[in-house]
Image 1 (cartoon, rainbow, N blue to C red):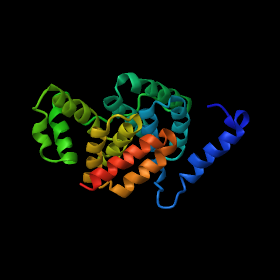
Image 2 (image 1 turned 180 degrees about the vertical axis):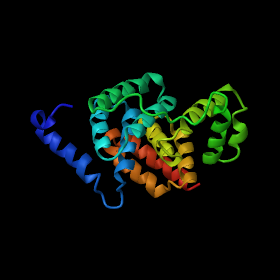
Image 3 (image 1 turned 180 degrees about the horizontal axis):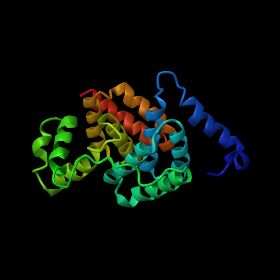
Length: 229
């Protein structure tokens, strides 16, 4: 990333102070380093911030995010952003990890087979959203794909736990915008797993510099609506 302190010093001073100091250290809005960096990585995927993602990935790895965790964020993004928007970030991650001497491929994290992915997928949906999901996959083929592919192929993987996976999904949806119905559904999923309103507000606060105020305020509105029932 360009050294803006040389080309745009006044802008760089204010931007870096806000994003890297003021927001990070805001009283009552702080997150542990790993959670904050996972959220930022997912947010940059959601808003397609490729160059900043490359820079942030290095910071995340230095802060304790493991290569497996970083890769899992990207893998799960395929279901929420699509292959066309997610795969360029996988290329970036592979470049960064290789430059750091990480041997690829990483150890496998899959816990399902092609035969068990559907059942384990809707069981995972039910764990997050309630028992009604045990039958929802039967409604149509897209709901079946949602259970087997999104949840059976990705949510069942190790490397990230369910609470972390719901956080990054929240970030994917908030950052890309235009997905408010799905965002509200996953806010409820977060709440169901114990990621409460105050926690989600911290996530929005820490990601605001990367997606701006409009999408952040939309996410806050959705959080309030879901939390109020």
